[in-house]
Every structure is written in structure tokens, then in C-alpha cells.
Length: 443
Image 1: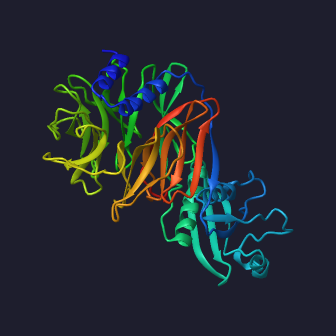
Image 2: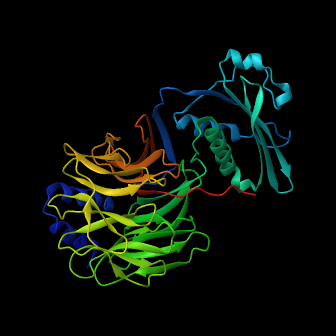
Image 3: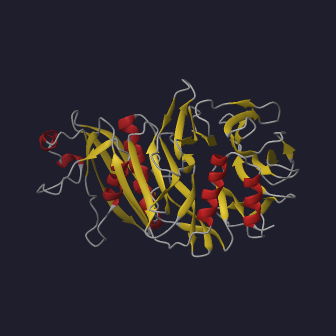
């Protein structure tokens, strides 16, 4: 059965016109011709209160290339919406170490923080030393040292930005993280992995058949995804370090929508193993198949709760698509969403405080976030066909796929809805984002 017949079969089971539109949007993307280019970032909005901070150029050996670490750090902090980066271009001289700081110059600019440091060549590596000063108290807030290979240049800048973000806001940053997404160039689909801002993209797998539903393992070492390369949807798991990949779900019918358990020991998948789409679990190596939901409706898009006790999923078992939950070992399902007539694609924040999903709002598909403590729901995006929401590891930002000018792009929005960014490829088409877990700092 080819991919077009598969999608038509799924759609025919969904009598609700809005639910069907979701699949129509997916099909439209699958057959869109596009080109590939670097991701570009546009930022709009900002928090009501922004922290003024100066990020100074690093001191470095005279024979080295000009360091751009401060530019990367500045872009990270500016893009969070939480910081106002002070323009230092007109200043006659900038300090390169703490002993050179004239604090009156910086209090006059109303700076609260000041970052400065140096880059040294140590053999084939770079030693990056940074001090972050509290301008008002004239004391050091952070003293950071990293020794990294040149290939980790951008990564160490993101790590520094994470530390500054956490020191001033009390929340961990998510700049030193990676994202996965799918691009389509001509007739070729590619699963890409990149830094959170789209730089340093690398191809994990490429195919002339669709690739969908990438999902990071909790430790960030593997990627599960669905490939149609054998003319039907099959779930693969691939190592990000060795490239080795393995088929973990190739049962009778369709195999789709992989979601990792929090401990990485198993996957929830959607199978048409019987007749209609139902939720199953398998061990991470593809063994130990167990059925979780049993209904005459379509149950799909599983997501484990952060404690691993429940699987949340989308279902039309109530007549219209809503989100339900079921014990991870199977049992009776209970409805989770009650506001709105259409809610799908549930995903948890890593801290378990929020649930994001897609809601049909007057004919437009938008990203919603529900505070699980209060039950309050807020619509965050403003597109007409937004989909595939995924949380940053710090639970502050949600990335999702949207369409602008008929082209697929990625966008982010903070959980308070105040800061938005758009990541787009010039002339390209990108979809299916998945935000990876936090990465360990280099030693």
C-alpha cells in the first residue's frame, strides 16, 4: 500500500471534517516542492521587564581570527525576550578583564550585568574564560572556563548564554540544545539535526519517500522516526553517534507516531495491527509488544507523562478529536481536554507543569498550552495551520510547525505568549520539529 492510499485510508475513518483537514495539511506538505537553505531567525515581542546587560567582545591572541562568541551569546539572550543587550559600539575602549572595569560608565548605561573574557589557543583546543559581573554590586556573578575543540565553538557560546540566563532569571536556559526537523527538497525528504537556532545542521537520514515523527530518546543519543522508504510507514531507531539504525516496528498494517518513555526503556507506537489505529508499547529494541488502548475509534499521537505512569493521546472516540489519557500498562481511558471541539497532538513540558496541543480555533489550528496545576488554557500561536508542538528542555518555550506564504517554517513562542521567533529556510519547506534534551557541558 503506497503512502497516498495509507493517508486516504486513515482519513476515511475520520468523519469529522476538521480532523480530516489535519491530514490534508500533512499530505499537502509531503508533495510540496522546496529548496534548502540556512535557517533564518526573526524575533518579535519581549517580556514586560527586560534585564539590561552588556556582552563584550572576548580578548584573544593577536594572530587569531576575530572571536564571535559575544555575538552568539548576545543573540541567544536577546532572542529569549528576557534581556536588553546594551550597544557598546560607540564606546572608545572596552575592558577585557575585571580590573579594567569603570563601573560608573556602565551604571550610566543602566547595565545590570557585564560579560567579558578571553579566548586562548591551547594546543589544538580553545580555552574560553568568562567573567560575568554584577554592575550594581561590583562583584563577580559567574566565573566560567571551558576547554573545547574548535568544532564546539558555537556550543560553548550557547553554554555561556545558558549560565547567564539562569543566573539572572533563576531558570535554566535552553540555548545549548538541539532540534530535529524534516525538510523536503524536490522529491527528497531529509531528517536534520541542528543547534536550537538552526546552525550546524547535519543530515541523519535522507529518502525519496516521506520521513515523519522524529522523537529524541531521553538521553539524546538516539532518534526514533517513521520512514516510508519500504512503501509503508515503519518505525526506526537510529544512533546519533554511530549512525546505526534498526527497525523496531514493522508489524502488519501501519506503524507510526513513536514516543519514548521517560526512562528510555520503551516506545509507545500507533499500529493498525488489527483494524483501526490503536496505541501499543514496545521495548526500545522492538520486542515485547503490548496493546494499551482498545476501542473502535482512532487512537493516535501518544505521549508519555513525565512520570511514565500515563500515556496521553488523541482520539475521536467521543465523536470529535480530543485528548485522553490511559495507564501506560493499559486500562480505561479518561478524557483530558474539555474546552473547544478539537484538540490533538499532546506533548508535555519536561517539568510536568504544562501540556501543549493543537486546538481548532474558529477554523484555524493553533498552539494551546494548559497549566496542569490550575487547568487554565491559553492559545499561543496565531497561524492558520500550526502543528507539531514540542517543548524546550527548560519548559519555557514551545517550538511548532506553521505555514507562512504557503511555505512550511518553524516558530517558537514562550509559554506566556510574549516572545515569538520564526525559523525559516529561504525558499525551503520544513516541518515536524522535535526539541532535544539538554546536553552536558564539555569537560
